[in-house]
Image 1 (spheres, rainbow, N blue to C red):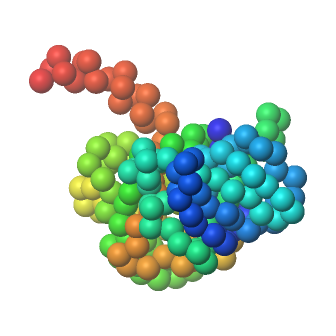
Image 2 (cartoon, rainbow, N blue to C red):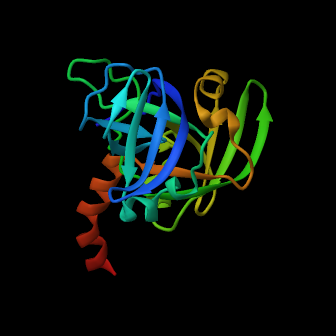
Length: 200
């Protein structure tokens, strides 16, 4: 489990295809990773395969590539990094599983005062997990839903700290981002589904 609080911004140094899948070598500040541990790259939970001083490798299999933006990643790309949380650590974000629900698209970016408003078009089925001032994860960053201006559109309000300490400061219109809805909303939707079907 993760919290959506980015610990480091890594850089992809190498991309290659191996029997394990699309393998990425990432440069980061970490020098104490262990093989087999979980790490989130832009919010997608992957497994550390090899590691050394300030680098590690992970691999994404076909099913992961189908529901994330990892298939678009190339050398030089910056990625938000977070290691799995440790019991007893501060929980400053929200419960993030590292299971990407879908890929959204940046449709609008507007500076407003000291914040940057960003509109995302989100995939079918995700809008019902979103509530104003609720939580969602975008490229691994725990964020608050600022508004729901249209069906299947979510608006974010990004502060300067987030823009300067994550990759979200590099967002551009048309860019694809990985989205994970709030797990509490998923359980609520699942539990209510039989009652909704009965009413229909």
